Image (cartoon, rainbow, N blue to C red; front, top):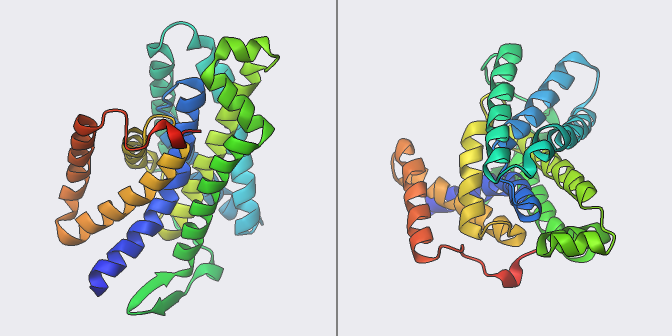
Length: 289
């Protein structure tokens, strides 16, 4: 039971980090109907820029993290204006292909700059472990759980209550109607990519506290993000938050009780079964934002 409980705890920890990554993907698809294949590399930039700022400047971890998130958020705006918007009206496949191309550019560019070596960004203040009931959790793990769940739920509330969130929802429901009532939908798309990129960068930093960061870190998380978004229901933010934690737990249990190399294959097998039984995803429109 101790092994089981510890596995569940680690799963919640990883899943809480996945929340931020998957929420950004779900937001982009929900508002713009674009699946951003460069989201993994945008995530990677958050972790690698934090590392670079820590090593090349006198900034502490909080300052470096905030600056990295801001830089990546601005980069999200650039991605929307320079990569997605110019081809958005061409075809549904055009943004997909454009973001795939950007993904490879960023992946190879980051590898050339930093090399594919794992780096540690865990601050010394987060060294240490909390123990109780035969279980243990690092300070960094507790931070990831708290921040991930708080931000995931907060994003859902933002979409439901905040004026900008309501404008995003109006854009999703009826693009033409949103334009007619004076909503600047192009600016809404800008905000969507800014928020999505910032969430990805923050997720990379938090998961970097419990793992490591490297230029190739975006690809594995991108696949997990697709699983979360599809299982939750495309564009469902609250569903993505819940599913991210569930996927983290399942992944951790599979690694504990089977061989690690089987875990990923089994997660995708579960995805196929869910899609066969419930192709619209696990969560209905009642919780859709």
